[in-house]
Image 1: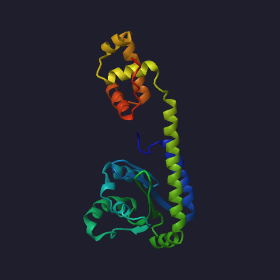
Image 2: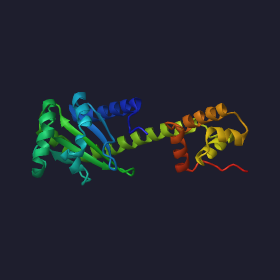
Image 3: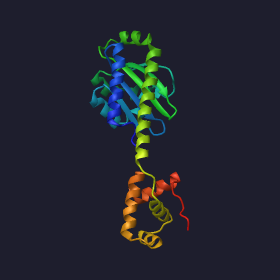
Image 4: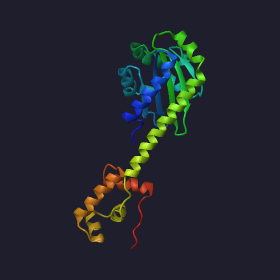
Length: 239
């Protein structure tokens, strides 16, 4: 399954977040979701320069980014910059040597750990480079911005849950014939053997298997059988 990469949903969330943050002055922001179990799963909704966002994801910087490392062990918002951690100087130099080209050198990050094992952050950077103004303004509104992150993420997860449920409903349940074919295929029977067992033509077996693959959302017949076994949707036919 894709990881928070629906363009329509992401566009709506990004626009809503930008509108909400406009109350705090000219800010650059990055709303980031990272799968704690697989950090290669990352989604970034941001008004940062697209080139930097692409570079960040392509290089897998989330694995070594001190801001992410700090966020992973805290629940509280924090300031960050080149001196965020003395023992990560080399890592910071590698990241900041690129990010500073886009005026991304210091900021304020809010943190959320959700029940789906995601690390969620909202990082803010002052567009006018007035870090002092950013710190004063955000410090006074920490609770409001933390709540904004919570509400934004709740909306994000809810919208993705809706489309997932919609996709599931659109995939019809397996017909009796499809279940029979899937069952015999899961026992290792060939298409020809299944056609003999069910007294149908081999091309018909292949036709039904193609429909099964599509309904389950598998890559091929072998994958469909594996997914069906794992999810327990195969019902042994009455013999």
